[in-house]
Length: 84
Image 1 (cartoon, one colour):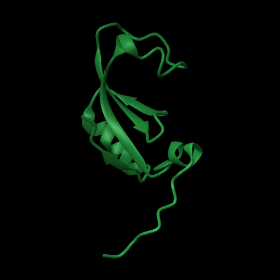
Image 2 (tube, helix red, strand yellow):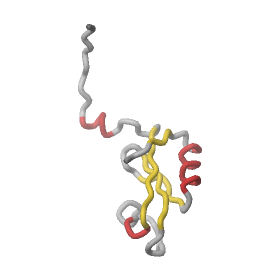
Image 3 (cartoon, rainbow, N blue to C red):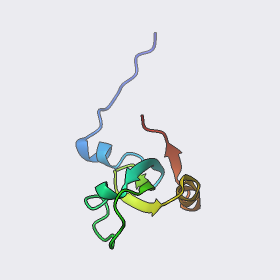
């Protein structure tokens, strides 16, 4: 058996893991968007939308269609991952 030397990641390194390369899609309610998208103007309550977030949770874009949000990830050369 080969022993691997593993160097633990710092909290800062872990926080930036995947930054600029990985994103995730999530269905969100317009009622819950105020905290995540502070610059969002008035939006009707009760809408189901799709949001694209960076690996660090930073919002990237918001769409009414999953395909358009996914296209935004592709345009920005981001690999999307599924969250369960």
